Amino acid sequence: QQQVKQSPQSLIVQKGGISIINCAYENTAFDYFPWYQQFPGKGPALLIAIRPDVSEKKEGRFTISFNKSAKQFSLHIMDSQPGDSATYFCAASSNTGNQFYFGTGTSLTVIP
Amino acid sequence: EAQVTQNPRYLITVTGKKLTVTCSQNMNHEYMSWYRQDPGLGLRQIYYSMNVEVTDKGDVPEGYKVSRKEKRNFPLILESPSPNQTSLYFCASSQWGPQETQYFGPGTRLLVL
Image 1: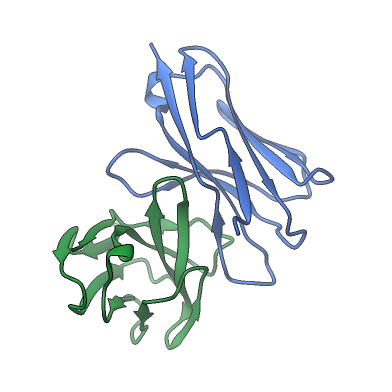
Image 2: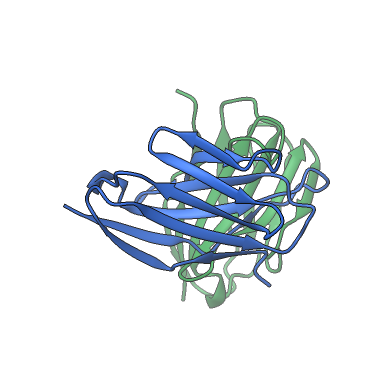
């Protein structure tokens, strides 16, 4: 059973556009929600993370929006660039457990 | 350079032939973890370790073993590999636990015939 559901599976965006990737979870014990970025042939790398005490976190062109009541969070990439083309994974964990759960991934292609 | 290393990077083997994938980190991290990545399924946690001699099952532990005898090393053992273990494997580490930045190795691509 997938603990974190991610959509869409793939996304094509024009350069300069906004990329939006969504994730949903059921386990209310989750309290840490990171996004990882993976380029082909590389391991994932942390992009940005949020905890449920805030509804939004922004780092440069990357923003996480978090809706605790809906148990959903999303990644917004503003002014998307070809260099942002990668696979993005949302994830979740709980501070009462030591497991870590990834979503199924979104392959983002930014067209020049 | 702070890093997580894995060996081998590529491996082709046959069903039933025991193999070990090594993982080592030079950051003095307490938490280490193994994941497998499969198309359409994302990354799934196999085993993790909170400290030396402390290991626990993740989401998909069947068919795998791990050990943590030293802080820096966390080998993944497949005692009798089967074709459904064909996958891309990643080792990761973080300072204290899963709620901190995990640093991933470069991956090991395994094909079991």
